[in-house]
Amino acid sequence: MGFEKTKAGRSRKVKYTLSEGDKSALAFSFFLSRFETDGYEGKIILFDDPISSFDLARRNATINQLYNISKKADQLIVTTHDVYFARSLLRKFCGNETIGLKIRKLSSGSIFEYFDAEDETIGGIY
Image 1 (tube, rainbow, N blue to C red):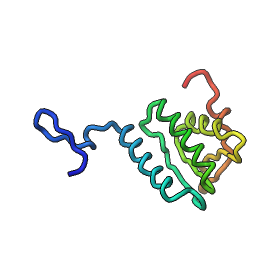
Image 2: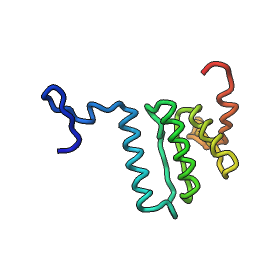
Image 3: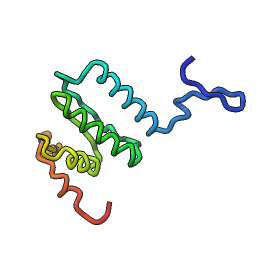
């Protein structure tokens, strides 16, 4: 049967009812609940753009959850295209053996280099 809701005698599935942010938050919650059951010890955890479609409140809640995970897991890796999210994350993790890296394209490939979130986001216009 799954998650369904009826409206005016018609069946509506959750995948058509939830916003993209709601779907992402629900998936993130299910993922985190699995670690709460199995534990974080001995794990390297990678999140790829965990905040897509999130509003400000969910972004901040996600940053707090990632910070909590970082204290429990052996290693936490977060990738994102959002430099402002990266800056917020690095500010939260400050002094926690955290480094920011970015990928720079070269003519012959690409390299990792240090990412200074404060310099990358300097300016009066977002």
